[in-house]
Length: 63
Image (cartoon, rainbow, N blue to C red; front, side):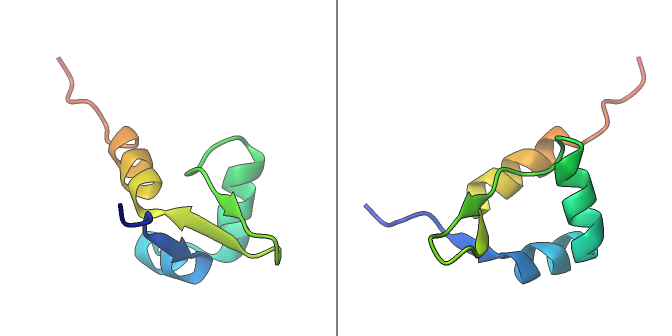
């Protein structure tokens, strides 16, 4: 079974068109995708977690 695709924080920021500071502010408020902290203190985001988080951010159409 292949391991899940882990994205570097820079890749996530580029995809979201977001600054590092804005990402950390969002995370501090309890928002944002789940992250993986590596033993070397770097941060990664699983591709599936980012996709699921983005899906959850979609606005529902007005009834």
